[in-house]
Amino acid sequence: MNKASAVRAVCPKNVREPAAGTVRVVPVWNGEAWGADALPPDDAAVLAAWLRKHDFKGEAGTAAWPTGVSVPVLLAGMGSTGDFQTVRWFRGWAAAGKALADAKAESARVEDSIFDRLPEGAPGRAALSRLLAEGLGTGGYRFLALRGKADGGEKTPPIEVELAGDDFAAPDVRRAVERGMLAADTVNEIRDAANTPANRLGPAEMATFAKKLADADGLSCKVFDEKALRREKAGALLAVGQGSHRPPCLLRLAYTPAKAPKGARPRVLVGKAILFDAGGICLKPAKNMEWMQYDKCGGMAAIAAVLLAARLKLPRPVVAYVPMAENLPGGGAQRPGDIVTARNGKTIEVLNTDAEGRLILADALTFAADEKPEAIVDIATLTGAVVIALGHEASGVMGNDGDLLDALDAAAGTAGERIWRFPMWEEYATPLRGTFGDLRNMGAPGAAGTIAAGMFLKQFVPEGTPWAHLDIAGTAWNETATAWGAPGATLACARLLAAWLEADA
Ligand code: BES
Ligand code: MN
Ligand code: ZN
Image 1 (cartoon, rainbow, N blue to C red):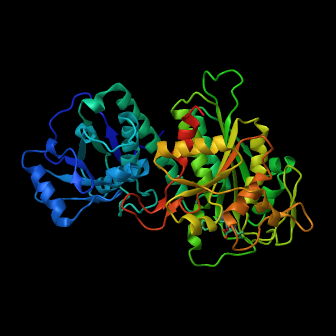
Image 2: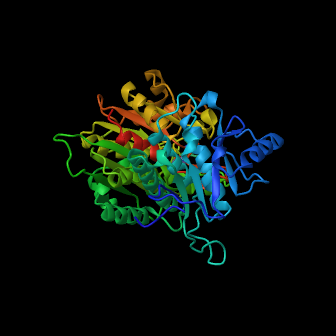
Image 3: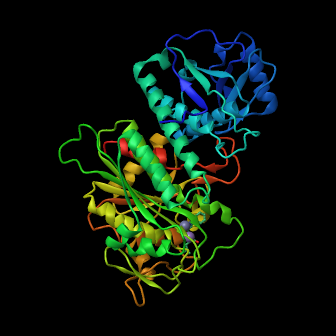
């Protein structure tokens, strides 16, 4: 691992008096600062007055620098105690991480008195501390790799956030914080790649990037190039890639734990990585097209999750498949009306070349099924329709197995992320029946586009294999900064997937 997050939570062995410039981070619940009594005398009263005057309620994911206090204080909004959600806790600490990074703070500190009172329904201290570390670490991220030397490209030492007090010194909490930082570091490392535009990162470059990571962390890595894909008869993935001079490929990463239980079947991730989605011959409008470099974010999240499984030394085997291609309208591009044959022999009428994600996932899902998996979860920036349905607050989820969907809901709670379930009634597959081929790659325009895409994918998962699909089109990137995150890739659902890989069921 070569990337340390710019903001880092640490549990020091010997907690000393904070240095003069150290920022005290204080959570705010219902407009009330919690743990302020750990500040120098009088500051608690000054803070309370400031909060009232500025009517700072501490909405989850907001931060503020109050004035009049005798030491630097950063307020981190956690929301309302009556409505606790891990996503709000996570965002609150992410906003703090971002504020510390933006202010170029030298050091910061959080007292364990934040645990003296906690809202009902909050998880234990270890789980909260892990999310606190993940929030601070990912919230402090900014994409700086491509800045000129004159503008922010300089390396600054990381900002250490000391977690002080007995609660933070407990072995399980300390370990949770370390694992949280490992997660943040991994997410931020892959975010740098996810933020790299398409001129600098094509399918081949992304495969090389993944190979390097795999080698360093002991994962096995195999890349199916164009020739191998032809041998495998992955006709749908090849068809999407044929409009670009840069050929498509398929990445397979596998993590095998040192002591895998005998006969353990892998959990398999499949992540869409379209390095750029121009729409192909069904060209997208120019407006906002630049964001389509982020059409690789499902693949990036899958890579981050399997990497994290390895770095956390999870007990279960994990495989990730990432189909990579560029959807461009070159002279060799597929056309509307083309009928392609997927790897499982199904024929697909390509009615819209811009519905390319489901084509590359179709073939990748058949590879996933070959692993005799315990379960498959795919992740993709698949439909604009999911943004209409859920906006940017939640990722869409659907699948064929209630227990798996429940496990993903639990993982979302653990990771402080949001997913929301769509139905998969068989009737939704009717519009996908082909006229000349087995399937068509889109249903009726304007009607349940997210579900239609999911129903399409379902045709490539064998009966009896638990499978779920995450649509992250609304959550994979920020177009402008939020209080808790920089513009660019968020790596939505990467930590959720890792939490699922870590969970028993
Ligand atoms: N990558 C896009 C989906 C997308 C759109 C992600 C906007 C993020 C923001 C996907 O390949 C796509 O173009 N989907 C089409 C499908 C349609 C042609 C059936 C869409 O959603 O419009
Ligand atoms: Mn598209
Ligand atoms: Zn796409």
